[in-house]
Structures are given as structure tokens and as C-alpha cells.
Image 1 (cartoon, helix red, strand yellow):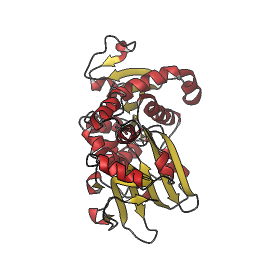
Image 2 (cartoon, rainbow, N blue to C red):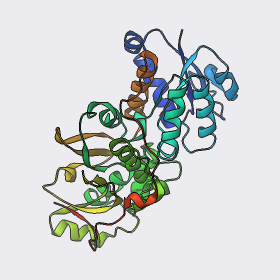
Image 3 (cartoon, protein in one colour):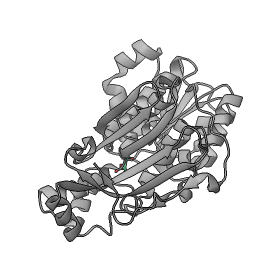
Image 4 (cartoon, rainbow, N blue to C red):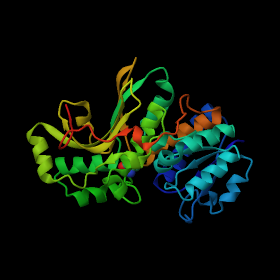
Amino acid sequence: MRKIAILGFGTVGTGAVESFYYHKDLIEKRAGETDIKYILDIRDFPESPYKDKVIHDFSLIENDPEIAVAAELMGGTNPALDFTKRLLKKGISVVTSNKELVARHGAELISLAKANGCSYLFEASTGGAIPIIRTLGDSLSANVIYKIQGILNGTTNFILTKMLEEQMTFSDALKLAQDLGYAEKDPTDDISGADSARKICILASLAFGKHIKPEWVRTVGIDRVTKEDMAYAESIGAKIKLVAVASKEPDSEKIFITVEPHLVCNNHQLSVVSDVFNAVMVDASSAGRLMFYGRGAGKLPTASAVLTDVCAALTADGSLNNDVWEDCEEDIIIKTDGQEGLPILE
Ligand code: HSE
């Protein structure tokens, strides 16, 4: 039997395990007989119904010939990078929700997977439940992508919504987002825009075929958004939202990329994206404008994406069509559109 290992039993790991057993019959119909054999974590979970699967020694997984897929749900780069490389070198496919790792090392890990006849899949890294990675990596293969605009961080969208609609304070809204399992371990990554920057890099790398690095992205978080800014937005028929944008002119190598609070006018489609929801708008040569919408964070929505990749990795070569990200230098990036003040989406 081809079995699964879960690396990291936090919010996403718990969601993946619970959702796996809830959907086991369905998953097995689609991907063949399988089971979760190990759950790797540094902690013990004596109260968990899955406590007997919990291990602390990574080498059990990498040396077990029954393991066909590992779901790396730990986050961060250390030890996730080392573990991922060791698994791929053994021909074990890795699926991940780890946007930091994909944004920084995606090109290398995709190549390593190919060289070893397995897959590195990352649907859960961006947009939570929204199937945007496979869309850009497969479904739009015969299109030139011109532009991607999106609300890519559930926590900040949740906070801005609660502040606007329920007059909650910033810190109360953040606390609620943490309690609901939306925020990063260090929520500064959400608030500062760093999480959105990693995600727009992943989408831009898929769309434009160049490996765009998070440190090249002009990134402004929501920490500088004041009540006055929000009142001003309301007075002109707009809302403030943290929007990530990446675009490329068809006849140019240059890529414009930014993450910053935008004034989103109330008649713009992104203005209705509230709470923990994310949305991604894609402008493509033949398909035209597309919009994808769904829950951007949380245990089960993220588990949906993780388990979809697990099924893909178990069934066949689940790799994406256009997943070659060429190396490039920072001078490919345009960081500003030259406008003063908050950008407006009309
Ligand atoms: N902290 C992230 C968010 C989790 O709020 O969007 C999902 O990537």
C-alpha cells in the first residue's frame, strides 16, 4: 500500500488528518488504497485519536519504502527545506502549504522532484481552498498571463473587515483571527504583507516562468492603515484592502509586482471579498479575465488543497505542465507604478 506521512500537526496538519479520515473512502476511490502512517511533530498529543501515529524521528519516514507522499505542513524553512530535499531525493513526493519555502526554493525543489521521478506540489501554499496553483500551472497553459491581482491573506482581510463592519479594534480582530487558526505563528508575517508577498511571488513565478523572490517585492502592510484612512475610503465609496499585484507587458521582460493597501472602489469585484475570503483575478490572452474566490485560510479549506495534491501525487505524476521557473535577477522587477498615495482599483 502507498502510504502518507504528515509533517507537522498544527492547525493545517490536524485539518489534513481529520479531513483525510472523513473522506477516506472517496480518496481511495480516486487514488487507490492508502493510509496515513506517520504524523511527525516535536510534541506529543496524548489526547488525540491519532496519537499512535505520532513520531519524533524523521528518519523513520525517509527510510520507509511504504511512504509514497509526505505532506510538509510545518512552515518555515528550517528544517522543512532539509526534510523536503531528503524526501524528494528518495523519490517520495512532497505536497506542502509552506509558502515561504515555495517562494524561496520552489524552482530548486520542483527540479529536484523531476530528477527523482516524483512531484513537488503546493496548491495549499496560496489562496487556501482556491485551486489557483493548478489553474495557473495547468488549466491556463495555452494562455499568456498579463496580470494577477489578488487578496491573498485571510488574516489581514479579516481584520480590515472586522474593523470596518463591527468597529472592532485592530488587536481584538487580530486575536480573533489567531483563535480561528487563520494567522501565521508570527502574525507579523500577515500584518506586514510578507505572507502576501510570498504568495504573489509563487503566482508570478508560475504565470511568468521566472523565479521571483519575496525580497524583491515592494511590500507595505496594513499596520499603517488608520481609522482616518478607512473613513476617507468610505467617504469616496471605497474600501481599503491589502492587494497583491503582478503584471507583465507581453513585449517586455519587466515584471511589476507589489503588495500594498489599495483603495478598492465599491463597484470593483475585489471590494466584496470580505472576512477570511481571498480572491484572485487573472487576465489571460485567450481566456480574458477570470476570477477565483474562496476561503483563504483555516484548517479545512487548507486541508482541501493539501489532500487534492496528495491524491494527485498518489495517482500518477501529478506535476504541473508549466512549472519551470527560470533564474532571473532583481533588475527584472518594477517596484512602483509611479503614483503617489494609495493605489486605486476602480
Ligand atoms: N496566515 C495565512 C492567511 C494563512 O491569513 O492567509 C493561509 O496562508
